[in-house]
Structure formats: structure tokens, C-alpha cells
Length: 338
Image (cartoon, rainbow, N blue to C red):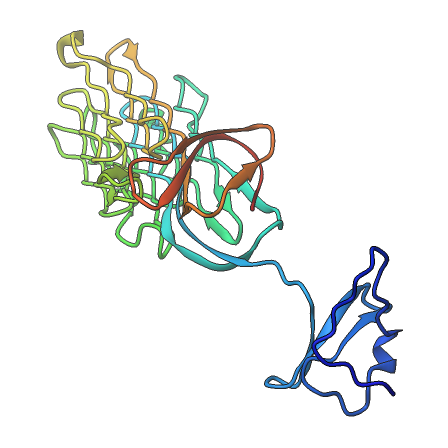
């Protein structure tokens, strides 16, 4: 066998490598041995330090910072509970592979309840790769003396309607540990409970007011601190509950029939819960819609995120030096990195 040293190949053809299956690998391989593996379909080399064969080319891995907020729940009608905020998760995914596709789905907000019989709905989940934030729970609807409903479970729990002695919905651990919805005050014309936020539970309704929505959580992933995932305020005949920071979905009130009776919608792309609707004698009001969620991805400037059609996304290369920030505000598809 010839031994070559410091050899220059002055030709425009090719250099033929040893070719064989995985089973035909050398029995006693040495560091740096190189061959084409027909079983695996690529060139491989022997890494003596780790005693294994590796592809001659492995895609680089990328670390990605993320904020994933789900859609908020809709507020209930007729002294309805505030909707719960969407779940909120943040952190860093490490070791993502360039060229691999990862799921992206931005959750929509739930629908507010519509008097007399269309109940509110929960928000939709938001998903980025292995991270799933749960949609906010719906606010309870008060159907009068007959069949009031409690708040729904979710990323944060929805508030219970007035007349309802049942506690509001519960939040999902890790996405709103304090984000339980509150109970309404049992009695006519009284206040419903506020929906939970990612940072705090909703406030219970009283004899004079709907409960405030739970406060959300602040994130500075975009370079500026912004609150997300606040709960919706509970509705009341007298005084409505305010929406939690990061949601702004205040409840409705209709005292003397001159108040704003419909619940306020949660803030778009903040995952806020919708406010609960009020009532007054023959005047019955609807709940506010939950705010849609958002997915924010931050990567180093050396890389680029490539999104499939159907995802609404904006790019910021100036706010955080050395990083690209992608904000996904709607749609579903996938992203890969290059």
C-alpha cells in the first residue's frame, strides 16, 4: 500500500474514496479514516476521541430564544366572568438544527358569549417546535336564575359568572401558576369574577363591582418590556372589572342603562382575556372576544429564520444588537433556520 505525504493532486477529475456498507467498516479504525457509507448514503470519518463514525458534514445547531403566548378566552355574557389569559411560556431552545422545519402556530382568541344562548369559548393554543402554550379558559355566562356557568380551565382560568358560587377555572402549571379565574358574587345584579392572568389570579366579584382580571407577565425579548397575558375583567350591573395588564379586556357595566354594557375585547397579539358583559333589566350584553396570541423568536444575526407561507411575520434587526427578532402574529406553518 502506497503512503502519500503532502501530496497535491493536479487534476480536474475526482478523488475516489473507499466505498462500503456500515457492516464493512474497518475492524480497527484509526483517527481520521474517511469512507463513503452506502448504507447511510454519506461520507463518514472516524472520530477516535469519541470512538464513533460521524458524517463528514453535520448541520450547525442553533439556540433560539422564544416567547409563546396563546389566545385569550372570551368573556361571558350577562354578568359574565372575564376570560382567562392565554398561557405564556418563554425560554431558550438549544441545539435546533439548520435546515430542519419546526412547527409554528399562532393561537386565536376565543369568542365572547352572545346573549341569550351562545356561550363564550376558550382561546386556541400557540405552538413553536416542542413548546405549546394553552389557550385561555372561557369566562362563565350567567343565564339568570336558571343555569349560570363557571369559568373554564386553560392557560389561565376564566372567571365565574355572577349567581355562580363555583370557583372560576384553573390555570395550567407553568403557564399561569397563579392564573385562576375568580368566583362571581352570588346574587342578582352583582359582579362576576375576573379571569386569571399569567402572573396573578383574577379578583372575585362583589356586590358592587365585577372582579379585575389577573395581571400578566412582562417580557423584554424585543428589547423593551411589554406585558402579555392579562385576564379579562368581570361584568357587573354596577361597576365593571378592569382588564389585567397585558390584556386590557375590561368588563361591561350598565348602571342606570347608561354604562358600556358589552365586555371589552382582549388586546390583539397579547393573549389577553375578553371582558365579561353586563345586564340591566331588559338590556343584556355580550362578552368581549379574547385577544389573539403571539410567537416571538430571537436568533443571532449570523442566522436567518425562513417561514412558510401562511404565517404573518415581521422582522426586527435593530432593537437588540447582534440579534434578529421575528414576531409571528397570525397563521400556521413552519420555520427553518439557515
